[in-house]
Image 1 (spheres, protein in one colour):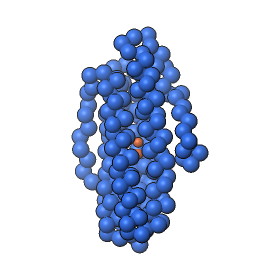
Image 2 (cartoon, rainbow, N blue to C red):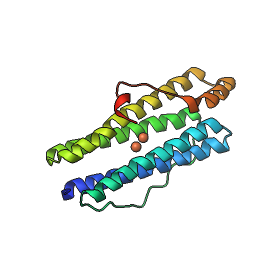
Image 3 (cartoon, helix red, strand yellow):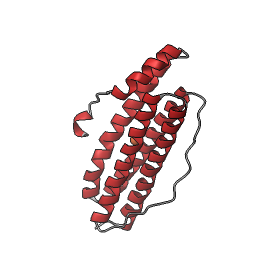
Length: 172
Ligand SMILES: [Fe+2]
Ligand SMILES: [Fe+2]
């Protein structure tokens, strides 16, 4: 059984994952209308992943005697000045999500809820990976600079981007 404190903290994370999915969907749309199909597909996939993160939490809350809350979401930013700015926002957002997960882990220990603590380890590992992917992308974009040919190749290659982290074997 979840304590009320844990239930509301998990419900807050459900909202954050849902908003992440919306933010990345808006980024996918912007990339698509700008003609960068690879980036758009990459962001559509990121958006789907965030929805999976949300659903995993929803099911956990409901299974453990809580009631998952489906909240109204903030409208995401729809336009960006550049792809660099878009990916900077993505990294900033992932860092914000990591901080939120860390806070959740802290609350689960305070509440002595070891089942939730164990469940959250998947998210801890996932955040290491997502931040690493965002940093790798930004490094590549910084190398490209304003080179249109570079952006064309980047768009072609981004869908096959793989980043190996020390935490990779603990995530799917
Ligand atoms: Fe997530
Ligand atoms: Fe994420």
